Length: 185
Image 1 (cartoon, helix red, strand yellow):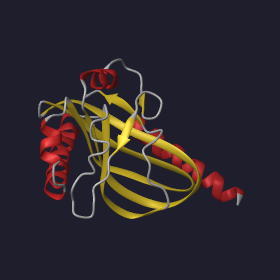
Image 2: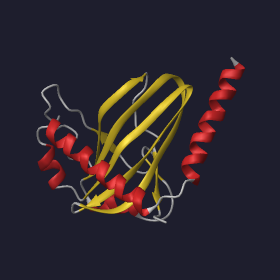
Image 3: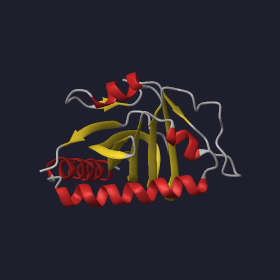
């Protein structure tokens, strides 16, 4: 059991270090923008009412693919693009670590919709990391079986949508996820 935990910690550390050390280039930004546009198009086509919600947003953070995996100790991460008025303005890396009863690997897309300027400004300011759960109240919205939005949480300052889940994972939450601004080199 000790060797499994040590191996898991080593793999998690390597994943986090590799993501932190990799340069983010202009071609990476272009690919991320393309992937984000495709993820937004999928979300709009699968979700009734999404177009109206997104059109009224002050900003939209699109993470086309978050990868999450682990056994007891887990890690997740991906890259995201912030869109303001439909145009990409900044890039972020997303990461989180978890510990507990979890096992598996999963990929999903994440969209954060910023409904007010204050929440968007808080997210975008400074060089510090932004952590969901510590910095902002994020409402997790649900999409019904018919593809329509549950309107209960849509008016919160920040609304999160996860969709396109693939794989099998015993845990799906965004609490504790951090976002750090990426600089294009």
